[in-house]
Image (tube, one colour):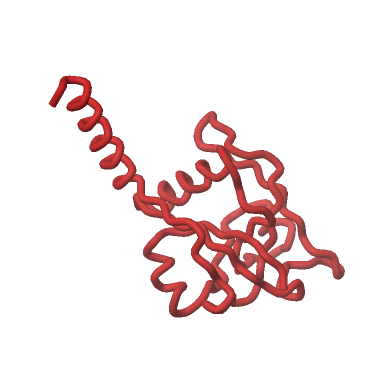
Length: 150
């Protein structure tokens, strides 16, 4: 078994806990053109994104899925389930951008063509933008209170 990482919305996570990760249409023109057909797969990062790459992935998920909550999953999958051409695994090099900000370059991903069952999925991060802002405001209010002797 191989290990990879997958970001998604909290609402998708609720379904994934019961049904597992199921292949979905990969909407990347270069992949469709290279394969000659629409690919249904699960986008899996080879390595756990860190720092700006991690933050960019969270923001991307929130923007694309119109939510303030996202999750990071650690997944186990079989080598035989990875998209391959002529027996060689397709290695995707991805550049992540939001507007003019590049949050990662040439990051390696794989496309897993089969369902990943719930037993092979672990929640390793949950992110809530709205709650983060509320927490920041609470700390700000506490700081202002301390600063003003309240």
